[in-house]
Length: 127
Image (cartoon, rainbow, N blue to C red; front, side, top):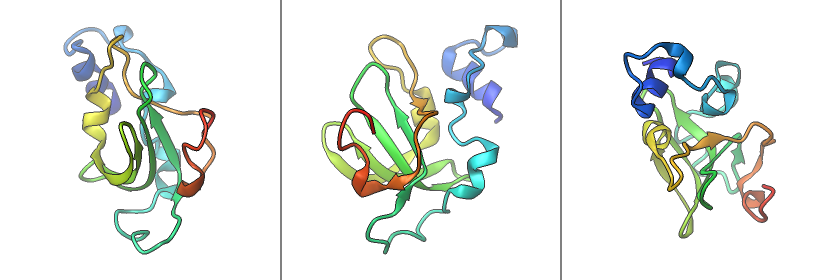
């Protein structure tokens, strides 16, 4: 399913004209031009401090996801999740795209995030 259809389904606008959809790069979770920078799942599992390439966040809460690995076929990822706890785990990109917070805002990709070791991620509000 392409980005436009996923956005339409997540926003309840399926079948509506595409002009109603938010066309914003922060909703393109893994842009094609960045796909080659992301490791497939598992190659970094024995790496002490893998590099997080992407950052996702819920704008109306403190939840944040840092992604060093992804499986584009299954749309799953592995990375550092900071929510109630700070932990590593697998998560579904489709589930992230469908999440809405209390204000109805979707999860966004941080367009200004620069790749860095996960040990440096989430140490302050600017990362």
